[in-house]
Image (tube, rainbow, N blue to C red; front, side, top):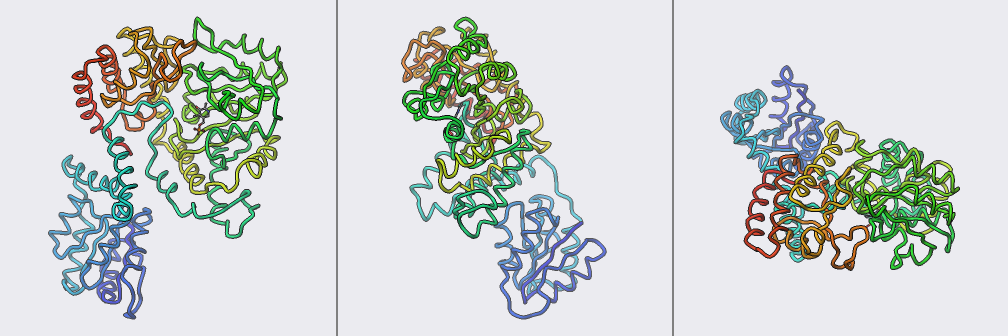
Length: 559
Ligand SMILES: *Cc1c(COP(=O)(O)O)cnc(C)c1O
């Protein structure tokens, strides 16, 4: 058992006595001070708290005259539960109930002999795993979700109100927006870190500013982990968003006026794939492909025919609203035949690819672009993966081609998330997202709703509410929103409604799966969706579902 111990000048004597008395119980690391020269207790509390917070030590002991300042300081660290004890009873109880891991002692309030007894009781008592105590310990940790932005409560209450509202929204609603997920605490820590203070134009080792060693380390980790996670030759982690990632590939490879063959927006493609209102549609000659009107799935023969006709410079696959597996091998064959660059935009499915629940485009594509915040669950941002031969052109397209300084805090958060994907606890997540999606989709389908393409292979499905109920996607999304279920209206292939109204809704399961929901919950949610849409004008149904949904999500807290 590793034990870190420290004091201020007022606790040096008691500390020495404890170091000796505990030497045969624990592996004691004395973090100072070594004499009675006046010092500041917080400096020493931080040393011990960092050891315990990081897991380098299992326990800590902190001593000052009262023990109070030490406990206040240590408790500011995550994973630290510091308890000021003046009796052996208190030490035993705080271990059992609170799972305290740092013992604070007041040198003025306990004798040396009794302090040794307190410490021995503290170290010998196991944490009580009883449900009641476990729940309370969990709520204690959970308080951090509300304290995270608590500095703003005083400094900027207006901005704090927005953060608080989002926190409550996440806690109480069922989020089925297919392009969203729920980030980990670690990801948010990196996002809010001091790395945001640094200008770092250029790339690790080749920056235009001094002082870039810390951000170089973070960016190098992000690049390395991205390549490892996806099996890519090269990664550029600087694009600020998914659209910028696509822009970088266009800038690296083709000229204004060149032809891109891509899926049109109203069929499931993305704005940055050539929509006339987007830069991509204004700069390049876009030839759109569509899905097969019967099957509503990609028609590879049609794509091949078009590719041979128009000879695009880039064939772009990947979508924002396509519920089926994409055959990247087939797309590669088409690209080889037509002599064009293969670009896959896996923004939506990147998490499924990372987790092995969708075939990877990386072995086939010249470039793979992605966002890092959709199924991947990381910070809002973009990334490009490419084959070695394109690395230089890609990097210069991003900087100095289209961006200035990269967002190194976001890049660090990308690194955090890439590592999370390689951890054992992430195993099975991507498969569960797909399983959940299929179960919810089937539940809605069994209630008579027409599902675009008849089902789903990935994290999202599209419901044709117009055909089924004669309502628009806009009306459906509004009714569901009133019932605490958040989806978005979405065009479906060959939609007859305007993009503002649409005939469909898009439903995704990444976020609810992150919260730990499984098949049983998907059946409940699918049933609620059908209940609300069956009774679109009945607000009592919406109220009932909202109540039940709130009860359900309370059992599945967001990270
Ligand atoms: C979401 C998305 C993007 C880009 O997203 P940003 O909002 O620019 O980060 C790009 N491509 C596809 C297919 C997407 O779904």
